[in-house]
Image 1 (cartoon, rainbow, N blue to C red):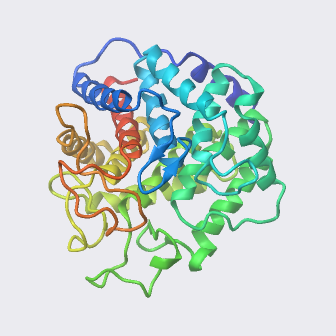
Image 2: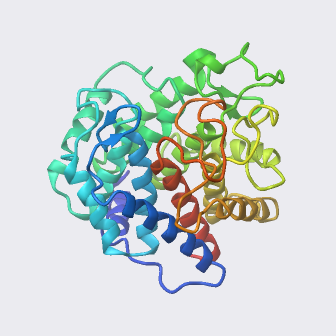
Image 3: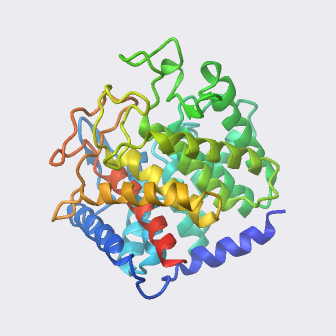
Length: 375
């Protein structure tokens, strides 16, 4: 049932043609994205070099994978050949490999595979996805379904499984993905999704009885943003006839409605979503993923414009103020798993990694650009 999806996916990703001339209300969005991306590309002229923070890591790590998700989205509306070459240099410099090797079942390294797949669709050379396919096939042919024990994993890996379902015209990939997803949602730690508040605990460490200092459930902003991104990207890939599409759509809509009243007056969301006294304040990465989710849902016609358009624009306006004159992004929470990590945040503070925050920013900006341009 996926064959027609393969054709349309190939047409989209093989061309990545520009959407055309700027539309009123989109110029500033594009300018901010170009500026922020230029800052990063100048800072990392060779994208394949190792990344050194508290230790040395190869550049096919998840943080860089999220950046390239954003870059490929930007390339879809701004067909700059330097962007495509930058992605190719990164992938080739890492030999199209996964950070922990093709034998690993870990979700994080698969994030790089999302861009490997994009580049494969433009030029289908088998070596571009050989390691990735080996890793995914190994999981598909296993009976284990308890790998994704933290919600970030959904965004890192789910779109890869969905893409192989379409490429191979084989629902075994999407069915295995659904089993892994259900374990995270309903089984891990008693279920990481709160069916009453429609938000996700990051992992079992935060399931009650754990509470914030204010006595509330602890929902991490960026973690919930990862789930929004995962669901949207999966639904962009799979046909609506997929037997589990309605589950993804239902959960996405529940989450978007739950997030709406949690937005701060300044347009941001707190890193601890329901407790403003728990490291409250501006934070870009989670906010960007929620703005992306709103723009994506409005583009699909699934969200009410009267309810979501103003919060979406307000969120983008807040994010735009985080862009320095040189393109650096402020108020990005560093890597971690909970509100306290990377604190305190500020306009001038650089996080431990600058790539994933930019990726989130580019994903939000391109989706908002599409909405305002009517594309």
